[in-house]
Amino acid sequence: GGGWGFTMAQLHHKSGSTRRLADFAKDVRKVVERQRLPGYWLELYRTEGSEEALRFSARALLPTDHPGYAPKRLPRLRVAARREPGTTAPE
Image (cartoon, rainbow, N blue to C red; front, side):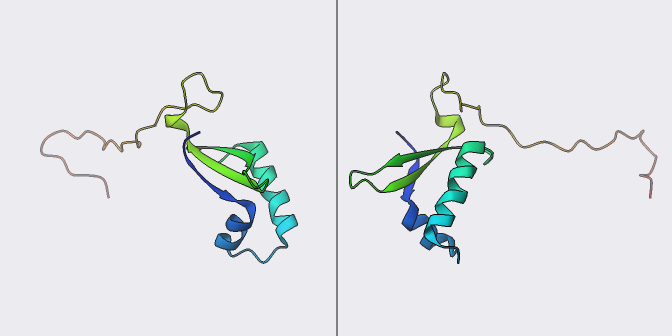
């Protein structure tokens, strides 16, 4: 699949976590289960060497029939209140 991935050991090291690797991995599995990282689909898999790993995929790049697909959202625009010509903005 697409996206990028890290073994659990790599992710643990990069995160700077002081938790034991086993506890860190347990926490990561909970995050994957909840799927609440905005814009990304998280997937656990095993590497060819059988290490547990995590893949991050942008939801907008997943196939449209994938359960995690979500189109890219545009940033919200702030619309200023409309004023009549010659009036000033409230202070």
